[in-house]
Structures are given as C-alpha cells and as structure tokens.
Length: 310
Image (cartoon, rainbow, N blue to C red):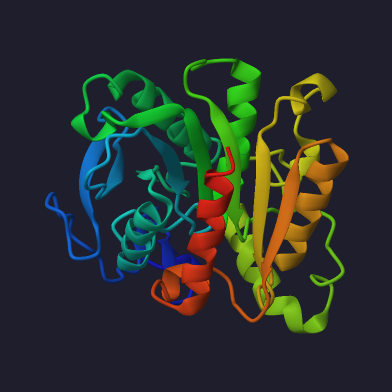
C-alpha cells in the first residue's frame, strides 16, 4: 500500500483508504475531584454515530448556584484531534475551574472518512444532547442552559461558527441559549489567497492547509465552500441580527492570524458584537501544547471574563 496523502508527524492516508493518525499522550478521566479543582468523565452523545464527549465539572464548595456551560470543539484540520489528548484535557479542566463553568468537549467524527458537513452536524447534535440530558444527567444538575457558549481552536473555532449559524437557521433548542462564541485561532480559507499566503516563505503552511481542506471538504467542493469561506454563508441580514457576541482570539506568530483578523472584521460589518484579542508572542494553539503556561492562564482569564459578562 502506498501513501496517497500525508501531513508529516500527524496523518497518513494510504491507497487502501486506511487513515493512520499519530497518537499523542492522552489523559484518563477522574470521577473524583482532583488536586486541580475539577473532576471529569466521558459521555456518549450519540452511540449510533460514535459521537462522544468529555465533561469537566469544577469544584464549587459551599455554592449551589447555577453555572454557565461551554461546549468546546477540538482542532486538527477536521482530520485529527480528540477530547482525550492531554493538552486539551489539562486546558479545559483548568478553564472549568478558572471560569466556574461546566465544560463539554465534543469528539466528532473525523475526515477524510467523514467529510464536512459531518463535523458540523455532529457538534450541533451536542446541543440536542444537552437539551435532552439536563434533567437526568447529574453533572448537568446546576447547568444554566440560558448561558451556553461555543468555543474551539483552529478547526474547532470554525465549527463553533458554523454550529452557531445552524442554530440560527434551524431555530431549534429554544431553551439552549447561545450567548457567545470564543473561537481560538479559527481555521478558515478561500480560493483567493491572502497577502500572507502569497508570500514565498508561506509555501509550506499553504500546502499543508490546502491538503487538510482537500481531505475534509465535501467531494466536488473547493475552498469557497461556505464552511471554509465564511463570506459564502447563505444567511440573511435578519439572521445575522441573531448571531451571538463573539471574541476572536488570535496569536501573533500564527500563520492563521490573518484569517482570524479577517473573520472578526467580517462579523463587525454584519453588525455582530465582536472583539479581537491577540496573544502577541504566541504560536498556533499554544494553549494545547503549553496548557500550564502564563499565556494560557491569561487566555483562560480572558475567556472567563467574557463568559461572566452575560
């Protein structure tokens, strides 16, 4: 069998159709409160589609108040990634504590075996799970579904945007109120190259991103697919009026920073309440690679402030 597509150190697609993904360090769950101030457990969101999630519940001794809910979608170019990765587990557990928020991290089906819009549909179904489980899942006993937030990094930031669009257009889950979006280093594209993408030194990044889009886009689609190119979304002016507030996080050393800035500018033109926050000396998804860093702790503080502004 030959390799027909490869992202070195991350992914190989073989001529047989088999996909090999690298296996980073993973973290087990802990149903008992840890020294870090939270407990975690895995849940099944849809067993018929193998959609699962990992929940993080912060310790709140002496308090019985309701807590906001953050639904998080991991990154990985739609082709790799998992809620179980140590970096995600550590970041989201600590975020649950810092923000006093219940976190649900979603494991959606991956491309190229499951091309878009499957990831969008899988992640949208996590809202249905919240709606259905809030009265029976003990860890949601104190969940305030009138304060739900969508977040994710890289491809997960893209998913947060597209799930929010789906919520507005399908007008479902009225009692699950999406208050805001917190995309981190969101992954978007288009057939037209940006100024940075046309620079010679960007060739390696462009080639990798093109390959990931090729592996994840619907068959017959290009990078102007609405899921990739946010300007192509078929949404009316009235519907944009219902889009939740957004804070877009970008990193100064990230190749995708340009796209994140463009995304924030696009939302602002649509009348969406949007804020752009930059971590100047940081790289793409630094919070996953360095979940205990000072920069990551600052990001968690900023996210907490946004969540509790509602």
